[in-house]
Length: 165
Ligand SMILES: [Zn+2]
Image 1: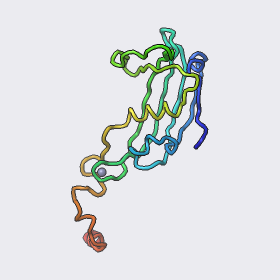
Image 2: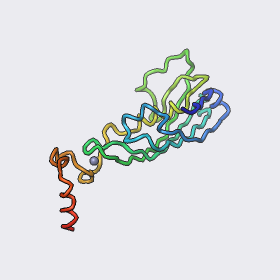
Image 3: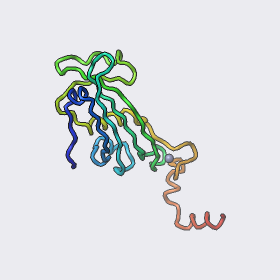
């Protein structure tokens, strides 16, 4: 396990700091169930600013080429992740308010002295992943629709396919 990058969120915003880095998918355990494997990494950019209203805020951009599991054939499906979201920092003593009243792509989070950036990236990735991943129709490598028959295929049946070509 690598050292987690933590930032003081309010100071980061006030100082208009910027952080560009990558986080390995292997280090984001909540993604392991939904992804095909643990290879790869997510590139992110975290930038702090005071927004138009003078509220300390963070902008997070993430990008990654991920492999998800096709729900039909259980094979790998590529998913290009790209997202940008703004976070408004709210004092820890204040309520975050009704999420329904938040503007699109602006989320309110509590200001904390140790914001775990990898967890923020992980949360954002989970929000952006499709609920169900799958190949385009006809692009599955071994359709489950073929059923048990395909599993019991003799090693010679693939030879037969080769001969027919
Ligand atoms: Zn598939």
